[in-house]
Length: 607
Image 1 (tube, rainbow, N blue to C red):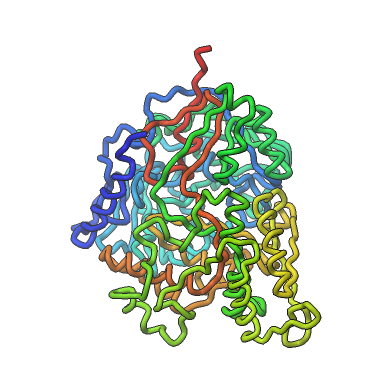
Image 2 (cartoon, rainbow, N blue to C red; image 1 turned 135 degrees about the vertical axis):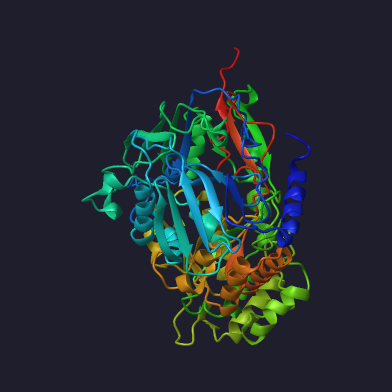
């Protein structure tokens, strides 16, 4: 690994600093587009900087998932697909470099064109772009894909469709998308929509395909075999159209990729130890240090690789459903945060080896600064002062315990807040104003052993406050269904965040999705200030204004007490067979989608 890895961030920051004075003088075609400044790579780049263009092709890799699947369509709202499918078998007009904050390079499209204000974007397709069945990608396929995904597809695609004023063909291989709202990120989002084959779905219901057929895509991999709920296998298409592109050099190196499904994480790990899986991601630092002394590791057949990164921590933890009383009261949420003895839980679960997430954008320059809001951040938030959650302007910090099991001081404070919120203890039970006992339910996916053990410790702490905490461990289908209907009091949440946050922030915590079934706003955030900060992030042009808006959003989300954060994933930890290898140069985003399996390869051992 190169010692200059984290110097990449300085280059990105320098690029952002130039953004205020760099604009498209006029609309002209380019090989790429960046949210800030210009793309780092030239039009004739040989490969992405973190890919090895000389990587050998071949071999098979086997991954493990928990749960199951009931659809091969990763773009429909209905059903639970193997999550990897939409990344392995499908492509968009442009592809993302994970070594830059937010830059796209031509993939299905050979060029992109935008005006200075980015009110529209125009793409020109590559003449060689083809679907996996050998048919050419046409402008009609592209327009149909945008419309179908925007009206019948998964909710994550529909918000973008509502921001399109017009989409039309402008030439034999070109199309233009005009937007109806000021938003500089939309031109980039347009480049990332998956492109599917229109003819496949004539006379068929796209939203109800299930296991009957997988959508035809343009990617290098196609589903070759599967058994419902047990495994799915994909093979590399030997006639893949894009294998000679610089963007694809040194990527998609495996001949076959298979996903096996297991009932829970413990069984999955045992399968890896037994040699049934090729690779395993470990998220627990204590287990990484203590649970990898089995024979395959000691003999060198299994290698432990650590992948650093410079991206924000994002948010991992237990989300409160604020649509339900009494979780709609910040005092109750703060009390539950006080009762969550992180220091003791972290020591028990990870040996204290992993730091706690302190905000949504911590570990980056986008995270809010400790202490009172100042400068532009204060200016952005002050108009909403009367409605802000307590400690937003003053500076909110998570409760800390003394590390002991009893956590007495925090529990006393929690009891006071619960009393202020109108809940009183009677006969050892905390009761609502109507006299009913407070019973909270946590929705978890079967196999989530880590969170299950956390909940067991947390439940014992809540008992001391008179609160009963129960757990529902359900299969994938029930888990997705209940989250979609917001049928929980608390549930696990994981939101990965980038160095260039944008429209996805509306999906995560925008008011429009607070009560929309299937929304990713699990917490039910409804805040005019949050909505305003997201809008500002999407419309400002100066980089310092963007940073201030993101820091203000970070303050609002933390002071809102919407999640009980747990530990951060400070680095990627991947155990794998010794035959798997990856480049020494690591991308800015580290072990992120686009790293494993994209730039890894299989090499036969000399012995």
